Structures are given as structure tokens and as C-alpha cells.
Image (cartoon, rainbow, N blue to C red):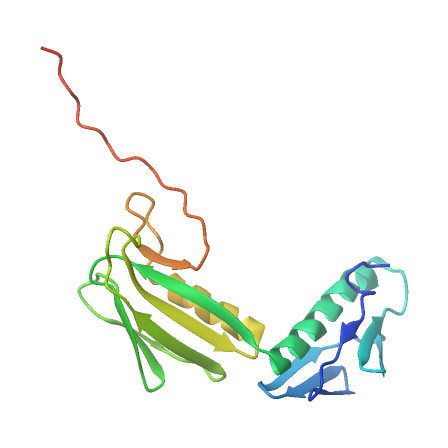
Length: 192
């Protein structure tokens, strides 16, 4: 048995799951999310718990068992509490703001960077003054969504607009991300 696949999924209060035609629809306070269920897989809801059972011990069914359970769990968590990612902007002159359905970034380029917000994404920005004590932290972008896939794709798109450079640490990074720093070139000192 798959250790992940055989684990039951607790269904919180206020979350409804309907399964038909190989698609699970999860409705909750944060929104509605869908998750695919492979053909022949059995799901059962009893006493506020959802379980997934695979039809056979074939290699394909074993590989899909844990994946199906993880996708269903992500749908339940997203519909009940949602997901959050925080991106830090580090660098002098870096700024961020939300204008309608657009995230506007100033990242040290000669032009502003505008990113359209996809459906189901909410963004808040907190700008600060960059200092050496806070590691040149200019702003934090908090991205929330009920869909983990959309959230991860959008956060990766934002972060990819200005990757962290290893010498000064300027750029965009996830909160808590460890960046390996490099030492710059040293001036050659001549002996006299």
C-alpha cells in the first residue's frame, strides 16, 4: 500500500465533496476546487473522512494512488483554509503595488513590470524602507488562493521576473528561502 494513498482525508465542517465522472468537486468557504480521480479508483466518504482505494496492485495504479490522495487533500485544504505564499523583494528602489487586477513591480529595470492577476488569486503588498539591517528588504508580496496549482504557478512567475543574484542577495525570493552567497573579487594587494 502507498503510505500517502492509504491515509484518510479529514473533511472539515462547511466543506462538501461531490464526485461524478472521474472528477471531485470540493466546495468550501474559500472557494470551489476540482481534483481528477483516475478511472477504476474508488472513493468513500464516511463520518467526515474521505478515503481512496486503488483497484489493483499494478505499477500504474500504485503510482497514481498517492497522487490522487494528495490532489484530493490539496483540494480540501484549499477550499477550507486556502494556501499562502510570501515573496520578499530585496534591493534598493524595488517597489510593488496592486492596481486593480494588475501587480506592478519596480525591479531595477528601465521599465516597470506589470503582471496580470489570474482568476482566484488575491495579492497584498507591504512596502518597507530597505536598510542593511533588514537585508535590503523593500517589500513583501503575500499571495493567497484556494488552488495550490494556480498559486504555485503565479508565485513562480513573479519570482522569475528578478531571480536572486548571489553576490549582494538582491532580487525576489520566497520567505525563508536560503540563498547561497558568493564572495566577490578581491583587489590584488601588491607587496612593497
